[in-house]
Amino acid sequence: MKKLWSTLFAISTLGCLLTLGAAPASAYYSPLPATATVAGNSVTRSVYDPKLGKPVDNNTNYQGVVDLKQDHGVIAWVYQIGQDYYVTCCVYDPGAATFKEDTQGPYQKIYQLQVKDGVVAYVATISGGGDQFGYATYDPAKGAWQNRSYLPSESNVSNLTVETQDGVVVFSYYSKSSGNTYSYLRADIYDSAVGNWYSAVSVGVPEVIFTDNVLAQTCKYDITNSTINNTITTSSGTKYPKTWGYDPSKNVWYNGPTIPLARFVAQPYTSDAPSLWVWFTDMSIAATKWDWDFGDNSTSPDRSPHHTYTSAGVFLAKQSINNGASTYTKAISTIGVIQAWNLAYSAMVNPNDLDLLRQYRDEVMSHNASGKRYRTMLYDNSEAALRALLQNPEMLVTLRKLFLANKGAVRQVLQGQVGVINDPEAVNAFLKTLGEKSPPGLRALSDTIRKEMRQKQNQGQPFLGFRLRRLH
Image 1 (cartoon, rainbow, N blue to C red):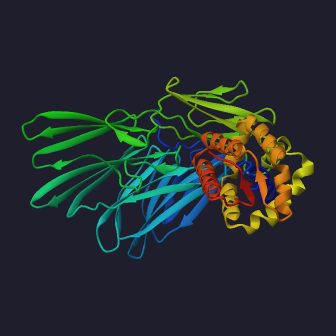
Image 2: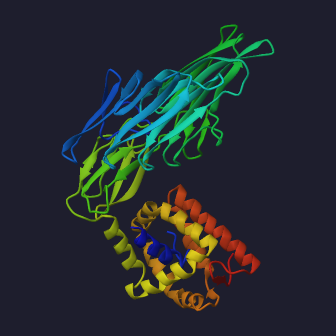
Image 3: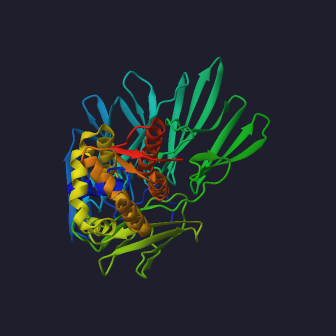
């Protein structure tokens, strides 16, 4: 895979220039829910995997299991070692065919453990005193738990309360200052489209929904369809209803209902071998109805279905939520990683030119600081690059044209000369289009390369061995 990817890197950038390559929904809904039991100090996780055709179990012994909660395959338990407390989150990831766990701690105390709608939340007393909120969800696209904690910065904090529902985590607490008592209500939500918990402040401070002197008024709330409805009651008895929701198009909270966002993760294979069995994990926001079109005339109304294709190929799977309020489509390859890359190679470059590109990769890219950095970044986003290329075959045609137009420049660089890219505007346009059609990681890489290209062109300096004749 690495050799193939390294070759693709050289192909797709002319060494970086020519390519790049039922209940309301929470952020995560397990397609294969596991269960857990506690016997003494032992926690056993169990699930039957129909793809493997057998049960999968995992058992761990602890000194003392204090609490265990579970909801539709999302499991969390608190255990004690000496004076310290820890919390472990667990799901079964069928795409990886294994249990995925994450442990946070040590803490002096853990309380209010909750597991609901794909989220684990709790309050923990940290070393040195003081309580903080902790919460997490699982993202199968990353194959890991996404943890976040929030320690209130106000003085004299008390009455910390956490609640999670519909993928939203709500925190409330009191703070005393200058003789007044203030009430705080904050919220956070996981947005899989950006792969991050999204509060109003990007550094991770949950959005302030309400704060005021509770001696004068109070605030009560409920969560419905990932939307927070709270009512402020003044000392005179006047009630002011407020609605707070998340807008995924702007990644902000605002005064209105949460806007539905269709999103899913597809896991077509567990290795380089071809696989017709695909797991689809729902990661949508504020959904109450799901409709799937797997791209082979098959459909499903399930939330996180699995589907078995009848032939190898590339299919466009589409998820529609809430009767078309939001849709999301992505390419699903059932031909295996190796076969998919080989198809991409044959579409992008003549096999006779592969040695030329490998030589450029090994003799130029690997000895250039920027080249090595870009190579690593693009390798880390290899699956995203494959999906972007296969889902947009016209990009493969463009890559082939760019390479053929600049093959002579590659030879010049290998001969120790400065290769001239005669139409860097075309390269820039391609990188821009790729960024627009790619997920955040690959989009950021595309933007970074375009920015450095502009800088080098404006300074009249070569970029990865190439001189850019003109770039707007």
